[in-house]
Length: 483
Image 1 (cartoon, rainbow, N blue to C red):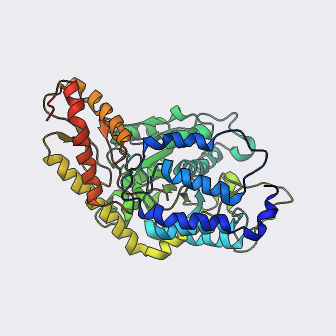
Image 2 (cartoon, helix red, strand yellow; image 1 turned 120 degrees about the vertical axis):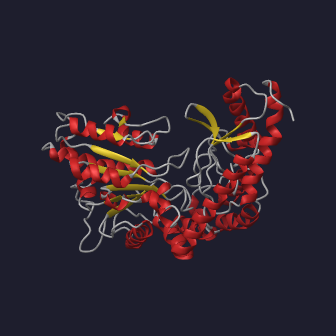
Image 3 (cartoon, rainbow, N blue to C red; image 1 turned 180 degrees about the vertical axis):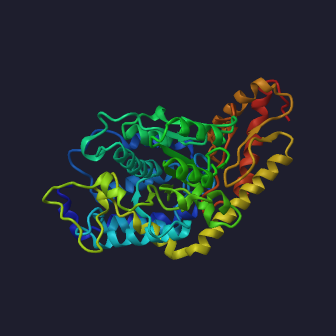
């Protein structure tokens, strides 16, 4: 097979193959293992040397589908609880396909008024959904990490201006270290953003009153007072990834007002607590923040990759990322927006399309119902764990993450971490349910995150069934009961 121009008459044929495979694949997600290690050997069939003569579009797609639908980790199914990963609603998935079909260059208005207009629309809808002021600026990003880069770059611009410097033009040379303070709930993605921005991931200081990471507000205020009026960045967190715990954002906003700081809020998945009256109190004060980030590929259930960054002063993103000054990039006029000057990306996929489609399809009430269903499922799982003699809940169930460990009779306390680590490996190898382990408050734990639109109570019940099926033999090896 030669030049792709030879396939122009059948350009849609590969897409038709994907469409025919989609129905059986999606319909079977509820029945398949999340990952089947027995088919990992198929991956070698995707390898080999670069072909001199291609096999053609339909043939290559048939090969990809034949291997991919079997060897993939089926994370869009209902039992992928590892990390905090949503799925893709039917409308979002179809719109993501549409984004590939239309292949819009979304960074400039002149290259795609459609993509730019839809981004403006979905940012307005998202602000409405989360209760953020309509006056906030915003931009879509590939992830919460890049959303942090965006928000913290704006914070850095603000901070440098208070030192009389234009950091976008001149960089950080000659400036003092930028103080960044948070609680122990801070996520590594915030540190990574600081690393990317040149401040160093370990310059962020945390103030915690205990080993849960909960904010020590008095200690934080003391550190701000010690700065003697120098500007600082505060990072608030909504929805910690083990416990679902959140910082008191309103109290942080009060400190911001008192000491003249910038308040950045990480709401990667926790910002969606605003959708339910049952959990909206966790987001109290977020509307007072200077910058706010969240993910779409978590609780919004749009395909990877999707993030949002919102900034109170809409002028800061262009000060942090604009000013290209090249003749071949025309500037938008009037009410037009060039989003590539509002964030770190220049070449940008039209990621507004799946967000627009899912919000249009299911609306505010549909997304509230999904969030509340997940809250109910997490509460159900928490109750089952509390009632079980061989399981131990390690944190209150506040949102959609349930933190617990396996603790059967007879296993010495000093071997429980080893047991849970082994059980976590066995669970992933089994593949029926995916829920990895982590360390919380010094103990090895499971922390299933329930954010997929397909998940039901049957799915979390299966998690416990599989753990209890795999656990006794491992416990027996470590001195515990085998039954």
